[in-house]
Image (cartoon, rainbow, N blue to C red; front, side, top):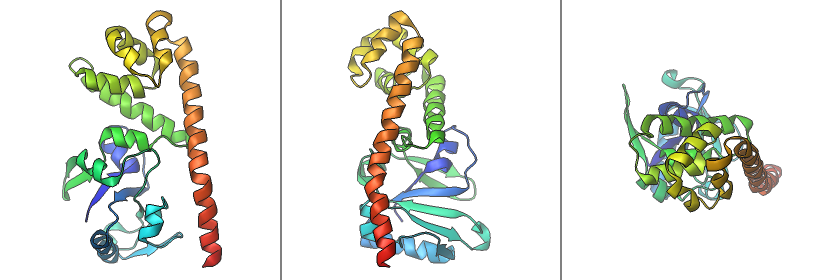
Length: 229
């Protein structure tokens, strides 16, 4: 089965600790892979809990398919399956960038790369802003003294902590002009944190609005599918 662990469970593995009641996975949509997923769902004695049913077209359009496991080894666990995530690359490219975690008693688990996970968490949900902040902070604090410029560019693009953005912009000012999505970073070198806080708030407001706009037609389509059923 070709899948990537995402969502809250992936956040935990990257150090962005949270309490997660479900498991989210992103899957490859192909006849063979969907057959493998259905076999796994049967082994888990999983029942569909929301609409739509597991279907290639629904997954390709961006819908999620939700199941509740009844097998004694996973009783009550909800499993959410998606194939398309807003703003993220297609599955094949995310698969190339994946991490693999050796989980005790389970074996190697394919997990979305940190960069892909952060991108997937740019949603309208308030808690996801905290997830993004913690995930990028954790990576920055672990590697800031030895990371190459490529990593520093990503941090400058994704950090949501004003003090760390100022610190990094002043430590590597030659990278600041490369971050075109954040032209206000140049002010971090001279003006400190205050303008950054306002810019970050505006940036996340736009992210939330974009996510709402993305999901609106999908929700309408889901309602039409429910009525058609």
